[in-house]
Length: 169
Image (cartoon, rainbow, N blue to C red; front, side, top):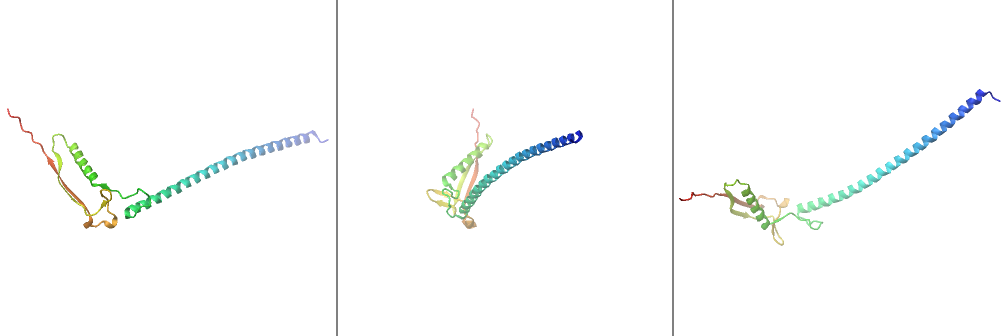
């Protein structure tokens, strides 16, 4: 029989080996958990990237469609999108806006001061007219921008003053 000192050393070594095995097993379990969490995080990031990429593709398609529509409006070619047309305003709406602007100007004038009226309106329409359902003013296309083809609106704002006469005794 070996001396008790050797047997005690063997038991201590066996206990140390068992502790190391348990520590290695615990570290493997911990590493496996970390790996699972990292894998889940990578999958989530991949899903997020896929979703963002899909959104970017959709937005890119919309931007390209808008560019096509804008080009169609600017060049005067029919647009591929229904309802997309060059901006326009009817003559009645233009007159109403002009009237509203003069009324707003009069409202801003101090009380007791003179008010403004349009004293003569001269309209010279050369281009930029759309004659579909109503006569409409439309912006000119770039190729139509020539000095001789521009329309003109001339008007004069004239102050209207009121005079107060003293009452006669």
